[in-house]
Image (cartoon, rainbow, N blue to C red; front, top):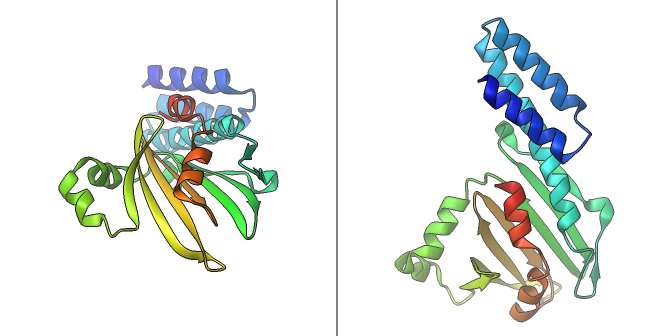
Length: 199
């Protein structure tokens, strides 16, 4: 238990100097553990891991491109939030403006990853889900599900691309685009670097 506490502390300090809440949670965990209060220790460690997830999420935002195609980042919409139950984080960035907009979200420790991987890696299930609007594609070596969203914005078609990345799920949605355009745009995202951070 002490080894896990020490390792977590080193990880956070190597990522950023903004660790006041983390330090407080770790001190609470150490005190509770020393006092034999395992439930309090567990809760404090969950809070510390939540801080780690938020810090990692902010680092992922730094890796994302500032511009995709002709769409610029809406920095005011950048957001990193912890998921329910202290498991992982949701990272969000948007590009463009209403009419032609792109939304990117990354959910670490997503419960949907296992289901998505099953559909992508089991031909019979993947075929059952193929309604002419979805297909399996490869993005930077990762299998992904591409779905056409007919008339999603002002009668114009858009696309949604979902990429399981380890235990995380990346969802990228673009209004008023073609399947080629969304794949070109998603190829500007450094998936391997993101995978290293969120694993």
